[in-house]
Figure 1 (cartoon, one colour):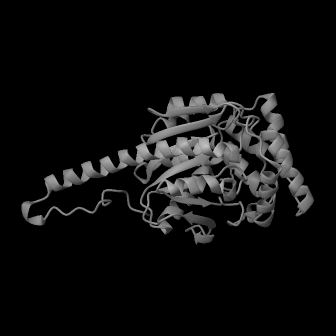
Figure 2 (figure 1 turned 60 degrees about the vertical axis):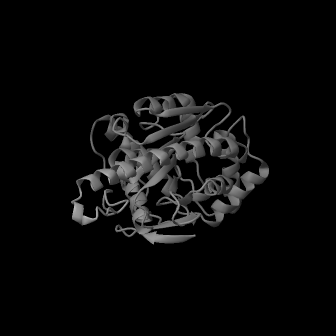
Figure 3 (figure 1 turned 90 degrees about the vertical axis):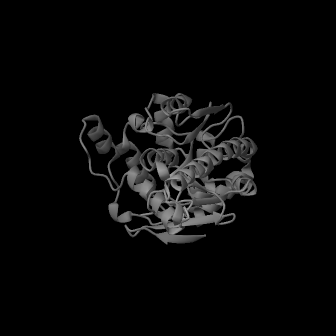
Length: 332
């Protein structure tokens, strides 16, 4: 694991797996979750398929910068502000978090990448795919939505349980919280083993960040509001994966996400909740590798077509030399 520092002074902890010259796949994790919630076995399968895999801690998570100077924002105030069509002040936005991803790409000299986002990470990836098209080779949106999740009573109960995070550094309480969350949002058809839950609890305890970081990220999600019109701008090949039994973001929101993105493929997995149990890794890997392979073919065809156009336009005595990525947007 290593770190980069953004122009805003935020340090992002990340891991890079696989050869540096392979097509990059950037994994963007969800609300309050650290990079290691992405199963290492999933990362390894993607590396074996020929990709460079990068996972990282979002700001206010794990070993990335904790923005404690922003304090404890009021979720209710932000929610009411959005309802009243005001623009409430927040510590940061999902768009700010999307700029963190670009900063990571810039630092690692990655002109373009395949983005795979889970839950809040899917929202961040959607923003980038819509607003920075030439930086995004493909989009995979997992257990995510096109707007701040609507809250029926059953879902509100889940969110309230999620919000009851330990505010003090207490190891036993932290472990109980992780076990409780596995019961609340886990996949009923693919339950995590006690060993998996223990490993997640130990890793997150060792790498814990500010307890209030979860709240600040939740405020950013609430502030983002409705992104349905934004999603209609996405042109990258897109795969939407959602659990039929997701108790946090209902499957209907995944279906809606896919319907808004041109030619998006939707895969609903029966028995999947709002987590990444090892038992699901083989199926998720197959879906991702197939999607990434087709998207990479699309991207290479696009580069070849652009190169051919430049050669046609080049003067005979110029040699017609073209850098294979010189048509992309600048890194900054």
